[in-house]
Amino acid sequence: MTAQVSPIPSSRQPGSRTNKRRPWTVGEWIAEIVKYTVLILLAISFVMPFYWMFSSALKNDAQVYVAPPIWFPNPAYWNNFPDAWNSQPFTQYMLNTLFLYAIPYTIGTVLSSSIVAYGFSRLQWKWRDTLFYLCLATMMVPFQVQMVPLFMIFKRLHWINTFLPLVVPAFFGSPYYIFMLRQFFRTIPTELSDSARIDGASELDILFRIILPLSRPALTVVSLLAFIGAWNDYLGPLVYVHDQSKFVLALGVESLRRTFTFNSTIANAYPYLMAVSTLVVLPIIIIFFFGQRVFIEGISMTGIKE
Amino acid sequence: MNRSLIKVRSQREILLGFLFVSPWLIGFLLWTVYPLASSFYYSFTRYDLLRPAVWIGLGNYIELFTEDATFLKVIGNTLYYVLLSAPLGVVSAFLMAALLNTKIAARPFFRAIFFFPAIVPSIVVAMVWQFLLNTQFGLINSLLQGLGLPVIPFLSSPALAKPSLIMIYMWAQGNAMVIFLATLQDVPRTLYEAAELDGANAFQKFWAITIPMCTPVILFNLIMGFIDGFQSFTLPWLITGGGPSNSTELYGLYLYRNAFEYLRMGKASALAWMLFIVIVFFTFILFRTSARWVYYGGEK
Image (cartoon, rainbow over all chains, first blue to last red; front, side, top):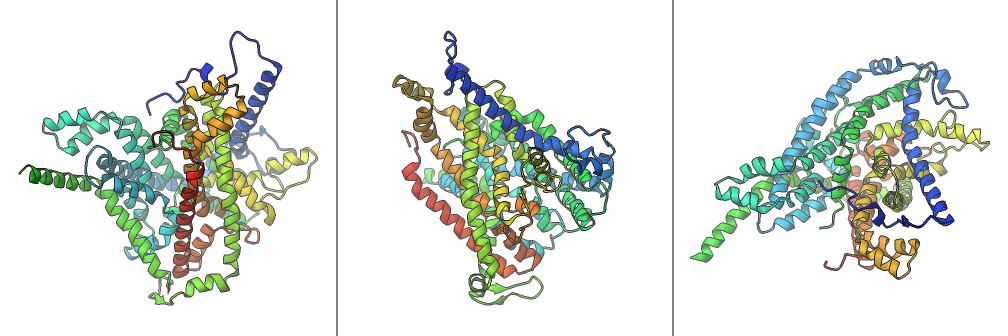
């Protein structure tokens, strides 16, 4: 994971036909042009929808409903951002998303998944691998299948309309993150824990004093992915959280849209929706901007063959 | 004497191991095994959360297959969606990864952009695409009209709504793409060099080396794609809400509706169990056929 993603010298890349001495043939020129055209068209298809979201957030209704489309709204209504944000208690939604869901969920996931991953990688014991494969297999049980019975369980516990059904299970580890952390823990030399054991350290000491400090990159990826997973989650809060005062951002955006669908005379429906969408995705863009390498390399790990 | 010492040690090790994995193990029993078992029971009952559950035997299953016209439509929709979205998602991710793996300038930049839609909240993806594909003032239809083409009712025509959802799914394949890219970079260069000595062209190298070397990851992503597809909920729910005229009412939506809109927990449990069995069955079939098309390297 700390390894570079592309350590291979570019001249040895599979698609490479370049030989520095020889000038390119016409066919190679055409291939290059086609390749970059496709690349740029794809890049546009990924960026344009988000640019359009942002630019529409700055428009008024007249600018939205006009043809041909306006790419650079002038005048730009920057006030749409605070106005849309305050049209519903989005600050409350954001605080709920952060402090009632995303942060406790992330803490629970990282803590429990590290402990479990330690048991699956740094300890030698009978049945370890059997249980690990069972753990991996549970990734295939879809949430939809557990959703109905879990709802009944949490209803009996009077946990509906709280964040407990979303946060408490996180403290029992998540197979995907257990797998990622295990892959990383396995790369740490066993001599480190062996010598600590000789010095009388307990396994928990070894985990918290040796393994975790050495696993900062893996812990970063797992924390970021868990945080983003909770921040982006829609179905979980939809099922368990019903009071508007407890809404998360995803539910807030949906509820804003619903007020517009039911009352189509409200002004600036689309600009407001796009403004709120922009604000909801903004933290993700910032996290991604700073952590994209860590991120992408972390996800790459899940594809590594055993 | 030695043997009993070893036995004691290994018992201690097992205890320690269990202790460390106990959070997952307890969670597995609480949040997976128990729900599965209890929903199996509830699938044979009528239960609305208010009154006690009533045992009705196979009633829910019989109703689904004989009286419920929507359910048959839902099965058709889901099979259509899954059988197209899973392979097309893999193809899209694989081609994007292969393109990024060629010699290109600014690869990290393009990789980041290609990946980005995968981490955008579904609610935002839904709002943006609904807006883009709108027939009256959506950007895409405005551009088509500008080119003198007719307006396409991407989301409002029963024939096009599913393909539109599949297209959006293919668009957000960053996760699978990144996994493919890592795999492509692991393919030993020596294989390509040997093929070049034998006079293989770029296409032959791609077909005979790149694809076979990636088959284990193709299998992994295909299975994930099928599971995603069968339980697909958030995007269809937010973008089309199952419409128009039930054309995008997928299994996940129908299950949710029965449970939380109609409060038919028994029927929803039956739906959940059938979904579980179908997913296990599909995964099993994929694994069974994999011996024929997946290359697991020399050692394994």
